[in-house]
Length: 458
Image (tube, rainbow, N blue to C red; front, side, top):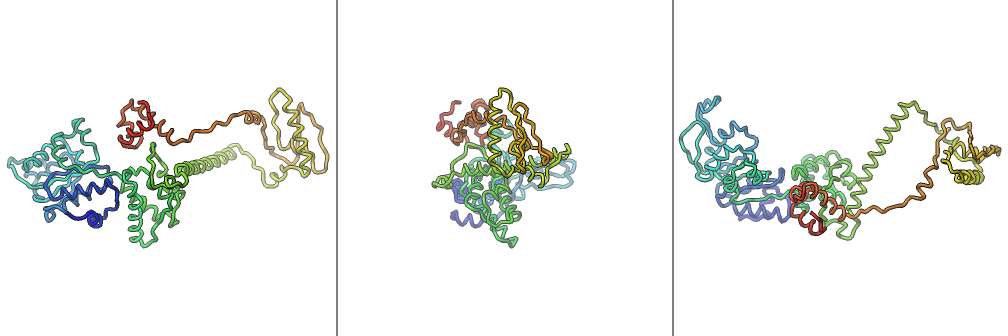
């Protein structure tokens, strides 16, 4: 049996996670037999590569191999494609045609998306797997074939069985040896290795400098959920290599170009290799800060557009630089401050709402530059300044409210947030852990462990 490392080099497989190693070991062990194999895993995890490894390391390696997407073949022609037909079997059957099970006798057929196969075709396939016999469409002659079937699916076949959309006997016949391909989020230690592999290959093909990530950008990459798995990661590596002006990207650069990397489905799994685990600064706090900064950037852009719309639609005038300088405090500032304090004391003695004070008022109370002062009238303070065409209102009515307010610290504990989210998810799905785990984006096993750890009431 060839070694795992040589298989990885031959097929361009990058990774060192235990789940990936176990899948490769199983594939190599079953390759030398004629047993049917069912490969399960999400879309984009490399199921077809695993089927090639099984075929190339079997006794059938010198015979034919074909990969067929069972979900892409139309229901009306799939039987003809797999098992062939006789002339006149249906309207467009103008000549005899051999199917894949006949032409690849002695070889291997990889049936991808087996869960989408029609029930009628499933019956034909079950007979081939059990006895090696099949009948062409429009014929009554039984033929034999020796074809190994490797099937794959990204669906949960037992759920399809329960819904009556997949034959239970066919499932057990296919799953003689099941191989579960791990998703990318289940092997975080391989994410950066794959990113470097794709980035270097792309840079070499395009004759450009390879892109690099700093430690925080790497952590951001490794803690994304990657719903598209390896295909999505390759797409990101090539996109950043082309669009990024920098060759060494920080977490802020990465998040600005790929904002989806900031999305999370809590509870979060702590990465023991993260800087926080090594005694460094908390990456969760930095991640929150990044998101706040980007939200503030969007809010500022929105406010700018809003102000422009208000100025344009209401024909408002904006003071120029000369008018803004005219609104500055007079030179004898200590005298002005004394007048302001006296005025505010008079205002606070009143039981009625405090009047608004303008910068013109302050300038009038402090006096003009030539030293003249205007009379003070607390009951109805009215001041004017010829230098201010559009006075700006400074409202002090809420100062006492702020002084009397109480500051309450917000609970930023990640553990409490996880516990609350788990409780909400369980309540939403009436205690069904499987659906709650899917909602949270974690495995059912992880959810069970979190429930026990936080003592969540179901």
